[in-house]
Length: 456
Image (cartoon, rainbow, N blue to C red; front, side, top):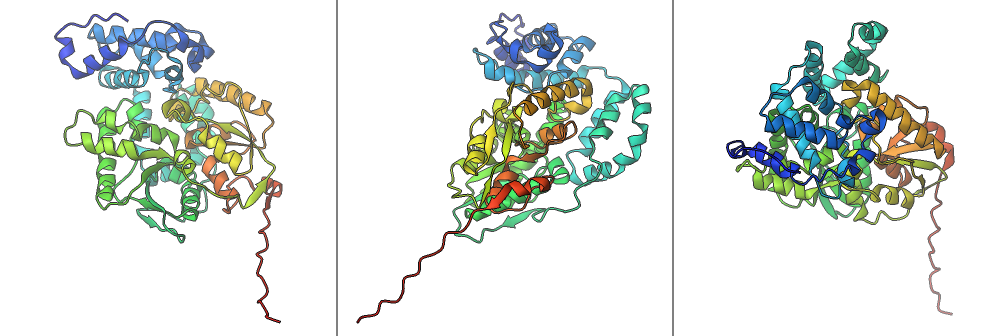
């Protein structure tokens, strides 16, 4: 793509980066066929190619973000399916992130939208605040209709997505510290405890730690680490995202300096995509550049890490059919396709593919709050495709997908690591009690103990 930035514009590092990315685009349009919003809406401006033109014009003309640009960029899920398909390697992920930051600084949003975005940024990354907000959400459910009538659909979507009841069982392993294995230690890893996931599904971290401990892995939750920064990053709140990234880099670097850390484990794929990108985010910060590169290089999704280990034979046999829903941040953001499915198959599950697996379910962080109509249409499309395979349950590696899909269908949804933990000796994952009858313990083979030798 030909660009027309002036020499003075190119003195700005962000403009140079925009120019570098734009020049790789060859207008081929292959991205449009895999873009969820274009597939639904059929508007070129709601495709990656269309958004690229809008971003190009915005930066070349040195304009503040117009209502049109803001509208179509806001509709982007950042699913990154376009990047998987693009033959030219256009770095759309970073281009749209730069555009969002520009929109956040120069755009003009209605008061209610600014309020919702501010609430999300100030509540979701902080587990205690989030837990308190979810506890109050049921009180507002009777007002859903009124909120929508007054044009407050985003607030209504926020309330509607809140679970009717929070998990009654708190996580066994919570807070900073080390969960030490009882087996012979083979590795030591850092686990990102996460923010929203701790509140919505504490069992995921517990299952992760149990599964690793059985294979001799110590798990460290570092003091001072917190939200990865993905939420505020995708809201265009650049400085907040960088602050959260630096805080985690500092916390994990302190742990690395003690030595003997084999990996940083992430069990929420949306977080994993961003943490792997810390090296890019902090590339211009001389105080953090090298530390961030080290952190990104050590970061692995839990499925990546488990593939390097022999988990042994499962302790339970299952006849369950599992539809594996690959989160966009997993397949497009991190390029992980086969590992979760292979692990589930090795654990004894029958894994079924989903038609249009590359199309987003509509969760996309807080997209289902900010763009509820499109998000729900995508969810309905995904659920239809899931049900075609007649699965007993759905597995995924991202809490956002789990929460979004559960709100729209009666098929239970579990995290991949919960199912693996169950197969290798862990408890029944939440919501799967009715499927317990289809899972049976594998009999332990009798040990042969020879009689004492008697010399006649």
